[in-house]
Length: 433
Image 1: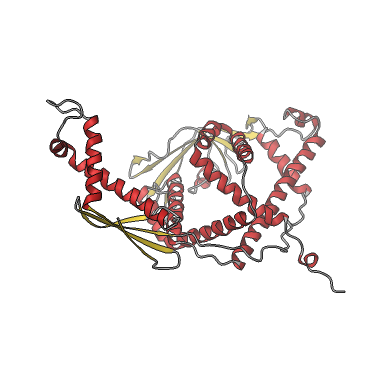
Image 2: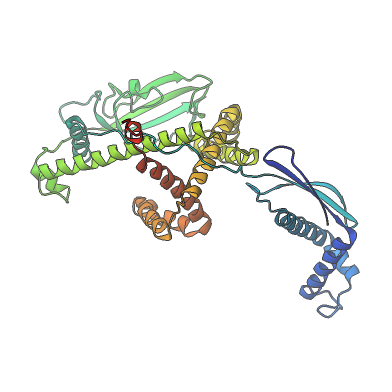
């Protein structure tokens, strides 16, 4: 095996590997011997089928498998011999394959930059003090009242007004044909401009019980919903019931009805503590992000191109999935992503640089995530996932997913270490005598 190592840039490496006929033939012989022991050909005992017949029936398959094996094993050996650790799996480029006489290919990859993190102590990263306002508590309690309020029918009128809840049946037609995206099944909606899409607030407001009301509306070519884009839609709504929420009194009885509180005062205090914990976590996250920003500013890091490409592909896949979930077709979602490619590549490069600098800090300070810490985080995520508990538990039962979570926790723990070891600059500087 002949190996040539090139360094096109500080981080990029190119291994050109050439294998001759003797090495290739040795692997082919081994492959055909193993194949002969496994397959049965008519007229021959197991293991006795001649190689010429095996080549006739299985030649393409064997040559392909042998080529892949040679590329994989020779690349691994060349990397080990040169003490090289690619940031991501090498890209393999076949340069000449006169198989089985010659195989020459290149393994192109990036190295992770060697980073020594400097100037990361003595920063003032203390989270900002937080407080909970009475208005915030009142807003949460009002939300609880609304979510636990029974629905009652409006008896004194038959016309829908803004602020009502209504059980409505909505249908739509375009070019005289029903839109399949609009089910026509009765649904409970709030009659509010912000809660009703597609301009349906003007259709539903003023509608009368049991009387169909119609609206024809045209949508622009760039409208967000694909099934309405550039079309004129004939909407029809029929109101089945007009409803309102009968809000319960905010008192001790209401608190006890929630099942875990003895009094309204206890509910109010628990609400305060919950809001305070959330505010502290937000402040702490802001401190972590400030720590990350300072790390990168004071320790510029080159992002390996292959790592950026892989991260960009992952981000693009996430964006496409989100657009598909919002109703866009696959081609349109891909087109939108292509239009944002430069922006997404910049985001990918930023994430790679962040990951590299935080990993380097964690290594310098011997910050690791224990098995117990990992198990505790998985348990918390499962318990908080509601109906998705089983799916989340299955996801993190796989080792590759636990590895990803461990890396994320190490990242979080390293930034937390920075915040906890920070101090105001005035305190960090010695006073003059």
